[in-house]
Length: 239
View (cartoon, one colour):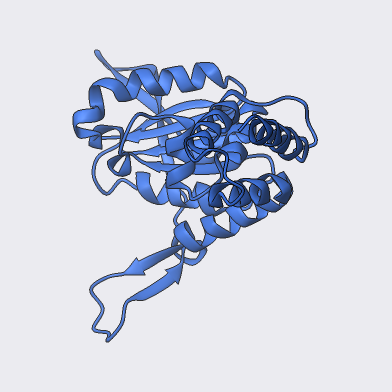
């Protein structure tokens, strides 16, 4: 068993070195610890299926993982289902052909005098310009105002500066943590952690008001995540 423990330690050291960086983000460190505990429970057996997947994931490299993630974003969010058609099969259309640019009303108002009264005017801002300008945003709008299509468009568009990760709040099955973001995006936890750590992530939370029993812990978790990764961008939508 002692020999197996040494072999396990050597394995993790070799695999982590594939990342090309001595820095190990906390989420990846936690994942290594959990993997080591499960392997220990199996007496560090030579055939442990999770190890091969973990090694391949780290050996793949960030650029390969990003390309695969962007392809997944296109396949998942880059199209819209056309409902209400008399068709024998579901019909989808590319989002780029259907998306209508959305304008937002600035919360800051300019007050103008009008006779004995006054009028407040809110500036109309193109949504994508606002997203480029601010790293912390909450977009509020009624049903049908275009919040979810905007999230889809931001996820599927070509933007080399940011790597989007979509979090439909109604799909959360636990606390808002790196592991949950990775699971919802079918992406490796280490890749998501690296993007967050290096300020490349754009986390898109769609439907803050749809958290159900998670409402009371969702906002503190979001605040903690944004504080832990100050260089990355976070956008949330809500009614």
